Amino acid sequence: MSKIALPIWIRDDKSIVACTEKIRVMKENFDEIQQITQDAFEDGLLMEVSETQMRAVLHQMVDELINPYDKT
Image (cartoon, rainbow, N blue to C red; front, side, top):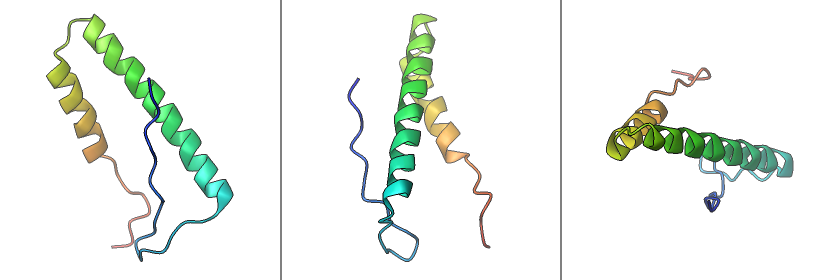
C-alpha cells in the first residue's frame, strides 16, 4: 500500500501551518487512518461486502465527522 501524498496544511485564513511538530503529528495520524481504513476495507471485501458499498460507507463516515471546535 502506498502512502498518500499529504498536502501543505493551511488554516481557514489560508496561512500555512509551518510548525514541524504539528506537521509530524498530522502525518502520523493520516498514516494510522490510512492503515486502519485499508484493513477495514479488506476485511469487508473478504466478507463479500460490495466494494462500492464499502467505499460509500467510508465516505459517509468522513462526511459525518463533527467539528467540536466549530465557532459558529
